[in-house]
Image (cartoon, rainbow, N blue to C red; front, side):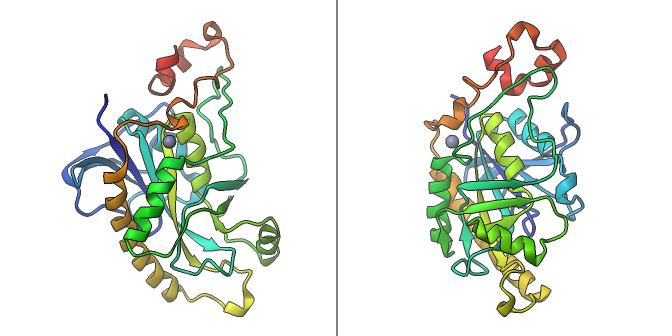
Length: 286
Ligand SMILES: [Zn+2]
């Protein structure tokens, strides 16, 4: 059995993982282009961890320009079976206070034409995505968040907007009428691609503010957001340390075999180049 390897994709605030030992820096080129940055490989609490800052070192890449395919492909190539995403989000519900942690279990897609599938060049695949995050990882993150001292909401609907601008008040009110809990710009493409790559994915989302719908809350000061972000980043790191130890060595969830019935294209029609490019992902089915 392959060793347990856990990927961490750090969002706003989380640009490095302290405590990583025996660190190796790995730069990868993928058939889909370059990932956001080099991957940092190392041991955290004895567990193999692969860390990637989602927006690159120094936060250089905006959400619409992120190469999600290269990021997830790189993780797959490095043998990652679990990915913990970490993100800052806006709260769309009064009951989710700035500083609270949410483990989203549903998504609504409001992105515009981002490349968010590995199945494009002569190969068609339709994965099940009714339950878009890994239930095992989500449960472990929920417990780990509590352990780290956060107020944690075990589920919630995350609306993923294109950005980079935040929403207008009219949009924010509309999304609230759809029943969403939090708003962000990055997690959904990651969840889709991770499922296609048969990697378990779930995310730790920290509310930093009330988006713009809650007018009585007044305009958010950037100082306050940064203060919450700094505290949340600390808690996220602690939650990750708790979570990675709890993850099982053997995956029993459906994520691990998500492609079993997903690929439609007859093998003989899949172009050789596509077979080669997607080998880390579809190799076991060819
Ligand atoms: Zn899973």
